[in-house]
Each structure stands twice: as C-alpha cells, then as structure tokens.
Amino acid sequence: MAIYTGTADANGDFSINFGTSYTGGQKVTVTAEKDAATKSIELFAPSGVTGGGVIQFSGNMTTFPNNIGNVTLTDGISGAIGAYAFHSGNTGTMWAKATGLAITGAVSSIGGFAFLNWANATSLSLPASLTTVGDSAFSGWSKCLSLTLGSNITTLSQNAFRFWNAATSIVFNANVTNIPTQCFQAWSKCASLILPNTITSIADYSFSDWPLATSLTLPSGLLTVDIGAFSGWSACLELIIPNSVTSIAIQAFYNWTACTRVTLGTSLSSIASDALRNLTSCDELNCLRATPPTLASTALTGLKSTCVIKVPSASLSAYQTAANWSAHASKMVGV
Image (cartoon, rainbow, N blue to C red; front, side, top):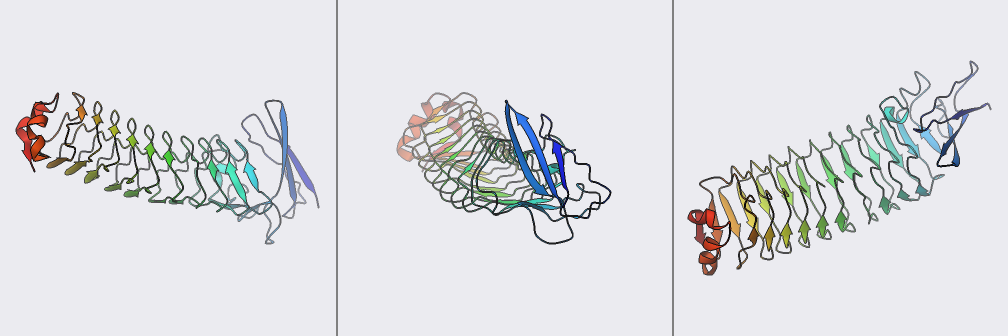
C-alpha cells in the first residue's frame, strides 16, 4: 500500500497530492510544527471499503476532500485531544468541509481550538468519557443542529460552543457547575433553555444573543448572573430569578423586550446598571425580598409605564422611598 506524506503549515492546513494509481483507503502521514515541537498523525484517505484507519470519513474519492462527509475518531484515539488538533482556521480547509463528527474513543479532554470552525458540520457526538472542553474547542459550528453534553463533563471553557447559529436544542448533564464567558453565545435559532440545578455561576455574555428563545429556566442553586449573560433575549416571555441569586450584573437581562412578567427572588441584594433595561412589555414585576435590593439608576430604564410592581406589603414604604426605586413608587402595590 502506498503512503502519502504532507507537511502542515502554521495554521495546521495541508494538502496531499495523490498518485494517478491511487485506489482508495491508503495511508496519509501529516507532520506539523508549533512552538519548536513536531507532531505527526496518520489517517486513511476515503475508500469504497468500510473500515480502516484511526480517523475515518464517510465520503468517497469524488472531489475529496470536498465530500469528506462525517468524520469518526475511533477507539484508536483516547486520552487528550490537543489544542488546534483538527481546527479549521477558515472555510477553505479540509475540516471545514466535514458534515459531522463522532468521537467514539475514550477521550477525556479536548484542547483549545481543537475543532474550531467546522462550519458545515450538522452533528456532533461526544464520548461519555469526556470531562473537559477547552477554549473555543467547538466554536463556529454554524450549521450544527443540536448539542448533548456527556454525563461526565465537569469543565467547560470560554467560547467553547460559541456561534452555533443553527442549533435548536441543548441538553446539559448534572455535573456542570460553572458556565464560562461567551460559552454559548449567539445561539440564534434555539427556542428554550433549561439549566441544571448544579450550576452556581453564569459568566459574562455566556448565553447572550438568543433572539428566538421564548423560555428560560434558571438553576435553583444559582448565585450570580454576570455581565450581559442573557442580554438580547428579545422573544423571552417570562423571567424568574431563583431565590438563591444574590446579584445581577450590568446588562444581565438587557433588552428583554417581549417579557411580560418578572419575578425577583428573596436573596437578590443588588441589581446593576441596565440589568433589566428595556422591559418594554412587562406588565408585572414581582419583588420577593423584604429589604429593597440596591438598584442602579438605569437598572429599570425603559420599564413599561403601566407595569405593576408588587412588593411585600410590610415593605411597601421601604421600596417607595429607596434610592432609584422611588422613581417607580406610583407603580408599586403591596401583596
């Protein structure tokens, strides 16, 4: 069997010139250098014969790699997948043409940018063994339709699943506790989100720009919602802040323009600038805390003029005279 070799450039891109006698299923060896380190991988080019190779493609040799098809990383790959291992820096690379990815080996961690910009992949299957997903590992999967996080994943990194513009569903496991910065930003087709109760913190812009989402269920153990975490949810109809939450950061729920009802939990002590700005459709704002939370001057800018603010009856006077709450005193009723 012939062996074809190639050298990857600084971006990890490479091309292989097959001989005129190529018949399919033959070995390709690719060598790349980065930071004075050298690494080689072996794979098998498409064949009409099923099987063979640590990395397998469902496509055939017609216009390869344009019809690379689904990619399977088999049991021959286990442990850690390193940073940039299969990343596609632009739409002209081989990996950008793949239509799906299944990792079947006992992979425990995936490094940063490992599968960046697989722009034509519509499916992703992650192994149950996976525990850690690195920075931007699956960012830019703009055609992928759904995501299920494996049962053993405990650590997600910033931008890990950013710009999944076609995805309509996501399923979390019960082991994730923190959502990092921009991790799921710009899921522009997803209609709802249910977060597991194990999550305690949601970082900056982690779920921002979900313009079609109509429902959100926040974790009962959530403590903080950071800057812009859910900004741009312009179709969501109701917001319930769990009793566990102590603070809402700047622009956390900015531009919830379709929301008609908001409930603020009993532990909420501070609401930052623009955190609830532009609740232009809100008919009812329920404040459950006996002591008025600290309210920034622009936190409720744009609140619907006819919105009724319901507060504990014994705290009505306190809310009506509290800093920045007093501007909405005429809207308040005790319940």
